[in-house]
Length: 287
Length: 165
Image (cartoon, rainbow over all chains, first blue to last red):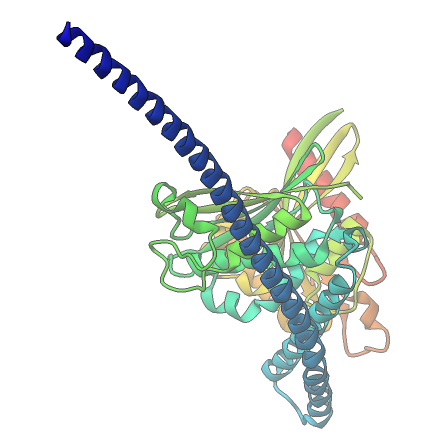
Protein backbone atom coordinates (compact mmCIF):
# COMPACT_ATOMS: atom_id res chain seq x y z
CA UNK A 1 0.00 0.00 0.00
CA UNK A 2 2.68 2.40 1.11
CA UNK A 3 4.75 1.60 -1.97
CA UNK A 4 1.93 2.24 -4.38
CA UNK A 5 1.07 5.56 -2.67
CA UNK A 6 4.70 6.57 -2.94
CA UNK A 7 4.63 5.74 -6.67
CA UNK A 8 1.49 7.77 -7.22
CA UNK A 9 3.07 10.72 -5.42
CA UNK A 10 6.24 10.39 -7.48
CA UNK A 11 4.24 10.30 -10.70
CA UNK A 12 2.27 13.37 -9.61
CA UNK A 13 5.47 15.17 -8.74
CA UNK A 14 7.02 14.22 -12.08
CA UNK A 15 3.89 15.39 -13.94
CA UNK A 16 4.10 18.68 -12.10
CA UNK A 17 7.76 18.97 -13.03
CA UNK A 18 6.96 18.19 -16.69
CA UNK A 19 4.23 20.84 -16.73
CA UNK A 20 6.63 23.33 -15.20
CA UNK A 21 9.31 22.41 -17.73
CA UNK A 22 6.83 22.70 -20.58
CA UNK A 23 5.89 26.16 -19.39
CA UNK A 24 9.54 27.12 -19.14
CA UNK A 25 10.16 25.68 -22.61
CA UNK A 26 7.27 27.69 -24.04
CA UNK A 27 8.62 30.80 -22.43
CA UNK A 28 12.11 30.09 -23.71
CA UNK A 29 10.75 29.48 -27.22
CA UNK A 30 8.86 32.74 -27.04
CA UNK A 31 11.98 34.55 -25.89
CA UNK A 32 14.03 32.90 -28.61
CA UNK A 33 11.51 33.95 -31.26
CA UNK A 34 11.52 37.45 -29.87
CA UNK A 35 15.32 37.55 -29.85
CA UNK A 36 15.43 36.23 -33.41
CA UNK A 37 13.11 38.98 -34.58
CA UNK A 38 15.15 41.58 -32.73
CA UNK A 39 18.39 40.21 -34.18
CA UNK A 40 16.94 40.27 -37.69
CA UNK A 41 15.76 43.84 -37.17
CA UNK A 42 19.19 44.83 -35.92
CA UNK A 43 20.89 43.04 -38.80
CA UNK A 44 18.57 44.66 -41.34
CA UNK A 45 19.19 48.02 -39.84
CA UNK A 46 22.96 47.41 -39.99
CA UNK A 47 22.75 46.25 -43.64
CA UNK A 48 20.61 49.24 -44.53
CA UNK A 49 23.04 51.53 -42.79
CA UNK A 50 25.98 49.96 -44.68
CA UNK A 51 24.11 50.21 -48.02
CA UNK A 52 23.27 53.83 -47.31
CA UNK A 53 26.89 54.55 -46.42
CA UNK A 54 28.15 52.79 -49.56
CA UNK A 55 25.60 54.62 -51.69
CA UNK A 56 26.64 57.95 -50.21
CA UNK A 57 30.30 57.08 -50.82
CA UNK A 58 29.57 56.10 -54.44
CA UNK A 59 27.62 59.30 -55.02
CA UNK A 60 30.53 61.25 -53.59
CA UNK A 61 33.08 59.38 -55.75
CA UNK A 62 30.92 59.86 -58.84
CA UNK A 63 30.64 63.55 -58.18
CA UNK A 64 34.36 63.84 -57.54
CA UNK A 65 35.11 61.85 -60.70
CA UNK A 66 32.78 64.05 -62.71
CA UNK A 67 34.40 67.18 -61.28
CA UNK A 68 37.86 65.74 -61.90
CA UNK A 69 36.97 65.00 -65.54
CA UNK A 70 35.58 68.51 -65.97
CA UNK A 71 38.66 70.09 -64.41
CA UNK A 72 41.06 67.81 -66.31
CA UNK A 73 39.43 68.40 -69.68
CA UNK A 74 39.09 72.12 -69.03
CA UNK A 75 42.63 72.57 -67.68
CA UNK A 76 44.18 70.60 -70.52
CA UNK A 77 42.57 72.82 -73.13
CA UNK A 78 44.77 75.88 -72.59
CA UNK A 79 48.19 74.13 -72.45
CA UNK A 80 47.27 72.26 -75.62
CA UNK A 81 46.22 75.50 -77.30
CA UNK A 82 49.60 76.94 -76.18
CA UNK A 83 51.52 73.99 -77.68
CA UNK A 84 49.56 74.41 -80.91
CA UNK A 85 50.35 78.13 -81.00
CA UNK A 86 54.07 77.63 -80.37
CA UNK A 87 54.22 74.88 -82.99
CA UNK A 88 52.73 77.32 -85.51
CA UNK A 89 55.34 79.92 -84.55
CA UNK A 90 58.21 77.41 -84.82
CA UNK A 91 56.92 76.35 -88.23
CA UNK A 92 56.96 79.95 -89.47
CA UNK A 93 60.53 80.48 -88.20
CA UNK A 94 61.94 77.23 -89.58
CA UNK A 95 64.58 77.90 -92.24
CA UNK A 96 65.20 75.09 -94.74
CA UNK A 97 63.99 72.30 -92.46
CA UNK A 98 64.93 68.75 -93.37
CA UNK A 99 62.12 66.38 -94.48
CA UNK A 100 62.48 64.57 -91.12
CA UNK A 101 61.91 67.78 -89.16
CA UNK A 102 58.90 68.62 -91.33
CA UNK A 103 57.54 65.11 -90.78
CA UNK A 104 58.01 65.41 -87.01
CA UNK A 105 56.29 68.82 -87.05
CA UNK A 106 53.37 67.35 -88.94
CA UNK A 107 52.92 64.50 -86.45
CA UNK A 108 53.31 66.83 -83.47
CA UNK A 109 50.56 69.05 -84.83
CA UNK A 110 48.42 66.02 -85.64
CA UNK A 111 48.83 64.64 -82.11
CA UNK A 112 47.90 67.96 -80.52
CA UNK A 113 44.85 68.22 -82.76
CA UNK A 114 43.86 64.65 -81.83
CA UNK A 115 44.26 65.40 -78.10
CA UNK A 116 42.06 68.50 -78.49
CA UNK A 117 39.55 66.42 -80.38
CA UNK A 118 39.44 63.76 -77.64
CA UNK A 119 38.94 66.46 -74.99
CA UNK A 120 36.12 67.99 -76.97
CA UNK A 121 34.48 64.57 -77.39
CA UNK A 122 34.87 63.86 -73.66
CA UNK A 123 33.30 67.21 -72.79
CA UNK A 124 30.36 66.47 -75.07
CA UNK A 125 30.01 63.00 -73.56
CA UNK A 126 29.92 64.51 -70.08
CA UNK A 127 27.28 67.04 -71.11
CA UNK A 128 25.13 64.32 -72.60
CA UNK A 129 25.69 61.71 -69.88
CA UNK A 130 22.03 61.68 -68.93
CA UNK A 131 20.90 61.27 -72.49
CA UNK A 132 22.94 58.50 -74.09
CA UNK A 133 21.00 58.73 -77.35
CA UNK A 134 22.61 62.12 -78.01
CA UNK A 135 25.98 60.37 -78.19
CA UNK A 136 24.85 57.80 -80.75
CA UNK A 137 26.47 58.83 -84.05
CA UNK A 138 27.43 57.36 -87.44
CA UNK A 139 30.88 55.81 -87.29
CA UNK A 140 33.38 55.40 -90.11
CA UNK A 141 35.58 52.67 -88.66
CA UNK A 142 38.41 53.22 -91.15
CA UNK A 143 38.71 56.87 -90.08
CA UNK A 144 38.39 56.00 -86.39
CA UNK A 145 41.10 53.31 -86.52
CA UNK A 146 43.31 55.55 -88.70
CA UNK A 147 43.10 58.19 -85.95
CA UNK A 148 43.96 55.67 -83.23
CA UNK A 149 46.92 54.21 -85.15
CA UNK A 150 48.24 57.64 -86.11
CA UNK A 151 48.23 58.60 -82.43
CA UNK A 152 50.39 55.52 -81.72
CA UNK A 153 52.55 55.93 -84.84
CA UNK A 154 55.91 56.30 -83.09
CA UNK A 155 55.23 53.22 -80.93
CA UNK A 156 54.12 51.18 -83.97
CA UNK A 157 57.13 52.13 -86.11
CA UNK A 158 59.43 51.46 -83.19
CA UNK A 159 58.03 47.98 -82.59
CA UNK A 160 57.99 47.19 -86.36
CA UNK A 161 54.48 45.78 -86.12
CA UNK A 162 52.62 45.36 -89.42
CA UNK A 163 48.98 46.42 -89.14
CA UNK A 164 46.49 44.98 -91.60
CA UNK A 165 43.08 46.68 -91.61
CA UNK A 166 40.25 45.04 -93.51
CA UNK A 167 36.84 46.64 -93.10
CA UNK A 168 35.49 45.46 -96.44
CA UNK A 169 32.69 43.53 -94.71
CA UNK A 170 31.30 46.58 -92.89
CA UNK A 171 32.80 50.02 -92.25
CA UNK A 172 29.92 52.33 -91.38
CA UNK A 173 27.40 51.86 -88.56
CA UNK A 174 25.81 53.68 -85.62
CA UNK A 175 27.48 53.54 -82.19
CA UNK A 176 29.10 55.76 -79.56
CA UNK A 177 32.33 57.18 -81.04
CA UNK A 178 33.91 58.23 -77.72
CA UNK A 179 33.30 54.79 -76.21
CA UNK A 180 34.36 52.84 -79.31
CA UNK A 181 37.52 54.87 -79.64
CA UNK A 182 38.49 54.11 -76.05
CA UNK A 183 37.55 50.42 -76.42
CA UNK A 184 39.63 49.92 -79.57
CA UNK A 185 42.51 52.06 -78.33
CA UNK A 186 42.84 49.87 -75.24
CA UNK A 187 42.61 46.61 -77.18
CA UNK A 188 45.07 47.76 -79.87
CA UNK A 189 47.47 49.10 -77.27
CA UNK A 190 47.28 45.75 -75.49
CA UNK A 191 47.92 43.89 -78.76
CA UNK A 192 50.97 46.08 -79.46
CA UNK A 193 52.30 45.46 -75.96
CA UNK A 194 52.02 41.68 -76.24
CA UNK A 195 53.26 41.44 -79.85
CA UNK A 196 56.29 43.68 -79.84
CA UNK A 197 58.59 40.96 -78.50
CA UNK A 198 57.87 38.33 -81.19
CA UNK A 199 60.10 38.15 -84.34
CA UNK A 200 57.55 39.23 -87.01
CA UNK A 201 54.74 40.99 -85.20
CA UNK A 202 51.48 41.42 -87.09
CA UNK A 203 48.10 42.76 -85.95
CA UNK A 204 44.98 42.31 -88.06
CA UNK A 205 41.90 44.44 -87.47
CA UNK A 206 38.85 43.14 -89.29
CA UNK A 207 35.07 43.47 -89.24
CA UNK A 208 32.27 40.98 -89.66
CA UNK A 209 28.65 41.74 -90.29
CA UNK A 210 26.06 39.72 -88.35
CA UNK A 211 22.31 40.23 -87.86
CA UNK A 212 22.00 43.49 -85.88
CA UNK A 213 25.57 43.13 -84.71
CA UNK A 214 28.99 44.24 -85.86
CA UNK A 215 32.02 42.21 -84.84
CA UNK A 216 35.35 44.01 -84.71
CA UNK A 217 38.31 41.68 -84.21
CA UNK A 218 41.85 42.57 -83.23
CA UNK A 219 44.10 39.59 -83.85
CA UNK A 220 47.77 39.49 -82.89
CA UNK A 221 50.49 36.87 -83.21
CA UNK A 222 52.01 37.83 -79.88
CA UNK A 223 52.76 35.95 -76.69
CA UNK A 224 49.14 34.85 -76.10
CA UNK A 225 47.40 34.04 -72.83
CA UNK A 226 46.94 30.74 -71.04
CA UNK A 227 43.18 31.06 -70.61
CA UNK A 228 42.89 28.01 -68.35
CA UNK A 229 44.73 29.79 -65.56
CA UNK A 230 44.27 33.45 -66.46
CA UNK A 231 40.82 33.98 -67.99
CA UNK A 232 39.33 35.60 -64.88
CA UNK A 233 42.31 37.93 -64.59
CA UNK A 234 42.06 39.32 -68.12
CA UNK A 235 39.13 41.62 -67.38
CA UNK A 236 39.74 42.31 -63.68
CA UNK A 237 40.71 45.71 -62.35
CA UNK A 238 44.46 46.01 -61.63
CA UNK A 239 44.86 42.32 -62.47
CA UNK A 240 47.67 41.23 -64.72
CA UNK A 241 48.18 37.90 -66.34
CA UNK A 242 51.04 35.55 -65.49
CA UNK A 243 53.30 36.28 -68.45
CA UNK A 244 52.64 40.02 -68.28
CA UNK A 245 55.65 42.07 -67.30
CA UNK A 246 54.19 45.53 -67.72
CA UNK A 247 50.88 47.38 -67.90
CA UNK A 248 48.61 48.71 -65.20
CA UNK A 249 45.92 46.07 -65.50
CA UNK A 250 43.25 48.71 -66.03
CA UNK A 251 42.77 48.78 -69.83
CA UNK A 252 40.67 45.67 -70.33
CA UNK A 253 38.62 46.50 -67.24
CA UNK A 254 37.73 49.84 -68.87
CA UNK A 255 36.85 48.05 -72.12
CA UNK A 256 34.47 45.72 -70.33
CA UNK A 257 32.85 48.51 -68.32
CA UNK A 258 32.33 50.63 -71.47
CA UNK A 259 30.72 47.69 -73.26
CA UNK A 260 28.50 47.06 -70.22
CA UNK A 261 27.39 50.71 -70.25
CA UNK A 262 26.97 51.26 -73.98
CA UNK A 263 25.90 47.77 -75.00
CA UNK A 264 28.07 45.02 -76.35
CA UNK A 265 30.40 42.30 -75.24
CA UNK A 266 34.00 41.22 -75.60
CA UNK A 267 35.04 37.74 -76.71
CA UNK A 268 38.53 36.38 -76.29
CA UNK A 269 40.33 33.51 -77.95
CA UNK A 270 43.95 32.96 -77.10
CA UNK A 271 46.70 30.42 -77.05
CA UNK A 272 49.94 30.75 -75.19
CA UNK A 273 52.78 31.39 -77.64
CA UNK A 274 50.45 31.81 -80.63
CA UNK A 275 48.56 35.04 -80.04
CA UNK A 276 45.12 36.38 -79.15
CA UNK A 277 41.93 37.48 -80.86
CA UNK A 278 39.84 40.06 -79.03
CA UNK A 279 36.42 40.47 -80.66
CA UNK A 280 34.17 43.39 -79.80
CA UNK A 281 30.54 42.53 -80.49
CA UNK A 282 28.28 45.57 -80.63
CA UNK A 283 24.59 45.86 -81.34
CA UNK A 284 24.15 48.34 -84.16
CA UNK A 285 21.92 49.97 -86.67
CA UNK A 286 23.59 50.04 -90.05
CA UNK A 287 24.05 53.53 -91.51
CA UNK B 1 26.36 36.42 -113.26
CA UNK B 2 29.70 34.85 -112.47
CA UNK B 3 31.58 36.41 -109.53
CA UNK B 4 35.35 36.45 -109.07
CA UNK B 5 37.71 37.96 -106.53
CA UNK B 6 40.97 39.51 -107.63
CA UNK B 7 43.73 40.98 -105.50
CA UNK B 8 45.27 44.28 -106.54
CA UNK B 9 48.24 45.78 -104.69
CA UNK B 10 49.37 49.42 -104.76
CA UNK B 11 53.09 50.04 -104.30
CA UNK B 12 55.21 53.16 -104.24
CA UNK B 13 57.08 55.51 -101.95
CA UNK B 14 55.47 57.44 -99.12
CA UNK B 15 53.43 60.44 -100.20
CA UNK B 16 52.92 59.48 -103.85
CA UNK B 17 49.14 59.27 -103.36
CA UNK B 18 48.34 55.54 -103.18
CA UNK B 19 45.73 55.95 -100.42
CA UNK B 20 44.24 58.98 -102.18
CA UNK B 21 43.85 56.95 -105.39
CA UNK B 22 42.04 54.19 -103.46
CA UNK B 23 39.81 56.70 -101.68
CA UNK B 24 38.97 58.40 -104.95
CA UNK B 25 38.19 55.09 -106.64
CA UNK B 26 36.31 53.34 -103.80
CA UNK B 27 34.63 56.23 -101.97
CA UNK B 28 34.77 59.03 -104.61
CA UNK B 29 36.43 61.36 -102.11
CA UNK B 30 39.67 63.32 -101.92
CA UNK B 31 41.19 64.82 -98.80
CA UNK B 32 44.06 67.29 -99.01
CA UNK B 33 45.19 66.45 -95.49
CA UNK B 34 48.01 63.93 -95.76
CA UNK B 35 48.41 61.12 -93.22
CA UNK B 36 51.05 58.49 -93.84
CA UNK B 37 49.48 55.04 -94.13
CA UNK B 38 50.36 52.69 -91.30
CA UNK B 39 50.65 49.08 -92.45
CA UNK B 40 48.16 47.75 -94.97
CA UNK B 41 44.60 48.85 -95.69
CA UNK B 42 42.31 46.57 -97.62
CA UNK B 43 39.36 48.01 -99.54
CA UNK B 44 36.84 46.46 -101.88
CA UNK B 45 35.12 47.62 -105.06
CA UNK B 46 32.92 45.62 -107.36
CA UNK B 47 33.30 46.13 -111.10
CA UNK B 48 31.44 44.38 -113.87
CA UNK B 49 33.60 43.32 -116.80
CA UNK B 50 31.45 41.95 -119.61
CA UNK B 51 29.51 39.13 -117.95
CA UNK B 52 31.64 38.83 -114.83
CA UNK B 53 31.26 40.59 -111.49
CA UNK B 54 34.75 41.20 -110.14
CA UNK B 55 35.40 41.89 -106.46
CA UNK B 56 38.55 43.93 -106.54
CA UNK B 57 40.30 43.48 -103.20
CA UNK B 58 42.63 46.48 -103.13
CA UNK B 59 45.69 46.26 -100.86
CA UNK B 60 47.16 49.68 -100.10
CA UNK B 61 50.64 48.96 -98.71
CA UNK B 62 52.44 51.68 -96.76
CA UNK B 63 55.40 53.16 -98.63
CA UNK B 64 57.78 52.43 -95.77
CA UNK B 65 57.03 48.68 -96.00
CA UNK B 66 58.72 48.22 -99.38
CA UNK B 67 61.78 46.01 -99.00
CA UNK B 68 60.93 45.05 -95.41
CA UNK B 69 61.03 41.46 -94.19
CA UNK B 70 57.80 39.62 -95.01
CA UNK B 71 57.00 42.21 -97.71
CA UNK B 72 56.75 39.32 -100.17
CA UNK B 73 54.06 37.68 -98.00
CA UNK B 74 51.71 40.58 -98.65
CA UNK B 75 52.34 40.52 -102.40
CA UNK B 76 51.59 36.81 -102.52
CA UNK B 77 48.46 36.04 -104.56
CA UNK B 78 48.32 39.47 -106.21
CA UNK B 79 46.73 39.40 -109.66
CA UNK B 80 47.71 42.95 -110.41
CA UNK B 81 50.10 45.59 -109.07
CA UNK B 82 49.78 49.34 -109.49
CA UNK B 83 53.18 50.98 -109.20
CA UNK B 84 52.57 54.59 -108.23
CA UNK B 85 54.99 57.53 -108.56
CA UNK B 86 54.64 61.23 -107.89
CA UNK B 87 55.03 62.99 -111.24
CA UNK B 88 56.93 65.83 -109.56
CA UNK B 89 59.36 63.55 -107.67
CA UNK B 90 61.51 61.76 -110.25
CA UNK B 91 63.14 59.57 -107.60
CA UNK B 92 59.76 57.96 -106.79
CA UNK B 93 59.49 56.96 -110.46
CA UNK B 94 62.99 55.51 -110.46
CA UNK B 95 62.19 53.53 -107.31
CA UNK B 96 59.09 51.86 -108.73
CA UNK B 97 60.83 51.02 -111.98
CA UNK B 98 63.63 49.43 -109.98
CA UNK B 99 61.04 47.57 -107.88
CA UNK B 100 59.33 46.29 -111.02
CA UNK B 101 62.48 45.24 -112.83
CA UNK B 102 64.47 43.74 -109.98
CA UNK B 103 61.78 42.31 -107.76
CA UNK B 104 58.30 41.95 -109.24
CA UNK B 105 59.36 40.60 -112.60
CA UNK B 106 61.64 38.11 -110.84
CA UNK B 107 59.45 36.88 -107.94
CA UNK B 108 55.98 37.65 -109.32
CA UNK B 109 56.42 37.29 -113.05
CA UNK B 110 52.78 36.42 -113.74
CA UNK B 111 51.39 39.51 -112.05
CA UNK B 112 50.10 42.33 -114.24
CA UNK B 113 51.65 45.70 -113.51
CA UNK B 114 50.76 49.26 -114.47
CA UNK B 115 52.98 52.27 -113.87
CA UNK B 116 51.05 55.35 -112.76
CA UNK B 117 52.31 58.90 -112.64
CA UNK B 118 50.06 60.49 -110.06
CA UNK B 119 49.32 64.13 -109.13
CA UNK B 120 48.86 65.22 -112.75
CA UNK B 121 46.82 68.17 -111.42
CA UNK B 122 50.12 69.66 -110.16
CA UNK B 123 51.67 69.71 -113.64
CA UNK B 124 50.13 73.10 -114.40
CA UNK B 125 52.92 75.69 -114.32
CA UNK B 126 55.60 72.99 -114.11
CA UNK B 127 57.30 73.36 -117.51
CA UNK B 128 60.45 71.64 -116.23
CA UNK B 129 58.62 68.31 -116.03
CA UNK B 130 58.93 66.49 -119.32
CA UNK B 131 56.57 63.54 -119.51
CA UNK B 132 58.63 62.09 -122.34
CA UNK B 133 61.28 61.26 -119.72
CA UNK B 134 58.96 58.66 -118.21
CA UNK B 135 57.63 55.38 -119.48
CA UNK B 136 54.21 55.00 -117.91
CA UNK B 137 50.76 53.49 -118.45
CA UNK B 138 48.53 56.17 -116.91
CA UNK B 139 48.79 59.78 -115.86
CA UNK B 140 46.40 60.11 -112.92
CA UNK B 141 45.09 62.61 -110.43
CA UNK B 142 43.41 61.45 -107.23
CA UNK B 143 42.49 65.08 -106.65
CA UNK B 144 40.34 65.58 -109.72
CA UNK B 145 39.80 61.90 -110.52
CA UNK B 146 41.54 61.94 -113.92
CA UNK B 147 42.00 58.39 -115.25
CA UNK B 148 41.43 56.79 -111.84
CA UNK B 149 38.39 54.71 -112.87
CA UNK B 150 40.18 53.74 -116.11
CA UNK B 151 43.24 52.39 -114.29
CA UNK B 152 41.29 49.92 -112.18
CA UNK B 153 38.93 48.97 -115.00
CA UNK B 154 41.80 48.31 -117.43
CA UNK B 155 43.65 46.28 -114.83
CA UNK B 156 40.52 44.22 -114.08
CA UNK B 157 40.01 43.62 -117.82
CA UNK B 158 43.66 42.65 -118.29
CA UNK B 159 43.53 40.23 -115.35
CA UNK B 160 40.31 38.65 -116.60
CA UNK B 161 41.53 38.33 -120.17
CA UNK B 162 44.57 36.39 -118.96
CA UNK B 163 42.58 34.17 -116.62
CA UNK B 164 40.30 33.25 -119.52
CA UNK B 165 43.18 32.07 -121.69
